[in-house]
Image (cartoon, rainbow, N blue to C red; front, side, top):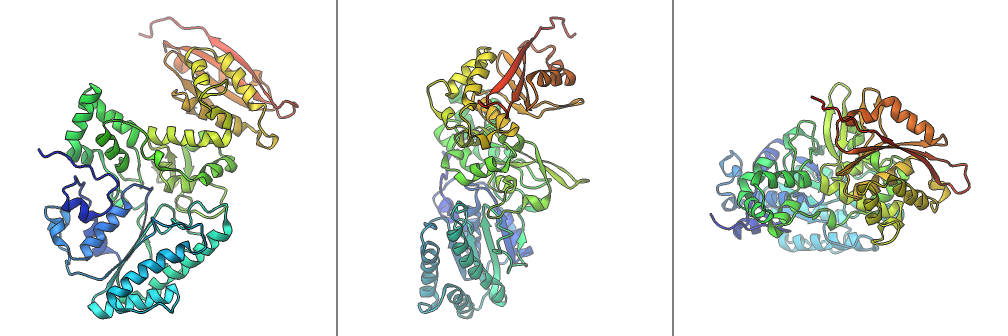
Length: 526
C-alpha cells in the first residue's frame, strides 16, 4: 500500500486529488445539495473542512469531472456542465482596520471583472457585484454559482469594538443583499461561517437561505465518522499504535477520547475533528492541535460575564432557536460555544424539543479550561509558585485537601468584590481541578439531587458542596443528606467530603470550609 500523504492545512480539492493526498470522500453531499437546493448556509467550527467542501463545489461547477474519478459524485446522476463561479474567501484579511473588508471584496471583484470583461472601478461594491453576476451570466449563458467562505470572519472578535463591527456588518448586509435581487441569474449559492449572526440583519434579505447546519441529512458533511477514519487512515493508526506500544484498538480509543464526539444534529453521527487527527497521525503524537490554533478572547470573557460558570456548560440544555442564534452583546454564550465547536449535541429530547450540550472531547474540555482560567484567575496560570496548577495538582494527588483549600482560599482573597458569588467559586474550583489532570464532574445527578462537584484522582475522591452566605456545616450536611459518598462505598480510593461556604459579608471575602474523611467499608460487595 502506498504511503499516506496527510493534507494538513490544504483546503483546495484539486490540489489534494492531483497531488495524491489521502482524501475522505464527501462528494456525495455535492450531488445531493446541488440537486435539492439553491441557496445554502453551513455553520461548522474552524478547521473542520468548510473551506475544502467549498473548494469541492467549485471544482464540480467548473466541470472538472476528471478530479472526481472513483469518488461518489462520479457515479451520481448529476449535470457536469461548467458554470461561471464567483468564489469569495474571507479567511484572509485584517478586518479591524477601516478599509480591511473593502480591500478584500475589491480584490476579488476586480479579478472576476477582468475575467468577464467588466469595468466596475467607478461603482460601489454592491453595484459591481450585481453587474458582475449579470455579465457572467450573459457571457456564458449559464447560471452563476456564488461561493462565500467564512462570511463571518469580518465580525468575529469585534464585540469590544462595536463601531468597526457595525461598519463591517453594513458592508456585508449590502453585499449579500445582491443575491436576492439577482436571483434569476444565479444557479447556486453556498455560504459558510462559524457563527450565524441571525439578529444583526446579515441574513434579513436572504429569507430564501436554507440553513443545513443542524439538518440530519448533512450532519456528516464535514468531519469524519470513526468508520471513515479507520477505512481511510488505518495504516497511519497502526504506525501510531506501534510507536505508543499498544494495540490498534487502544490507540483508536485514545483518538476517540481526544478528538471524537462532535455531533451537529439530533440524529447525526459522532464525528472526529479532521485537523487534529491529521496532525496526530502525521506527527505520531496525540496533542491539542485544534485548540492551539487560537480561540477568540471575547468568547472567554462572555462565558465569565454570563454568570453561567464554566462547570455548568457541560450538560447545559437549550432549544433549537437558541442553538442557532448569535448576536453582538448577547449575554448567553451557549449558541456561540456550540457553533464554534466548544460544545456539541449530546442528546435530544424530542418531546420537550430540547438539546443537551456537552464538551465534545478531552481536547476541547482541557483546552477551553486552560483558556478560561487566566480570565478568572491570572495567578493560577503561573508555572511555579503557591498558586500554580502544579501546586494544586500535588495537593489533590497526594491527599492533602486541607492544603488545597488553604491555597484556594488565599487565592480568592484577592478577587474583586463584584466577582464574588457562588458560581464564580465553583467555576474556578472546577477549572483548577480540570487542569490538574483529574476527572471533575459538575452537578452529577442522583435520585436525591445533584452534587456540586466530584473530583477523582488515582487514590482519592473529593466531594465538594458550595454554599453562599450560609455555612460549611450546612454544605457538609447536604452531602450527607444526598448520600453522595454512597456511590463510592466500595471504591478502593479514599473519600473526602468538602463543605465550602462563600461568605460575602466578611471583609476578607475568604472561604470557610469543613473537611470530613469517610471511613472505608472493607466489606466485600459480593
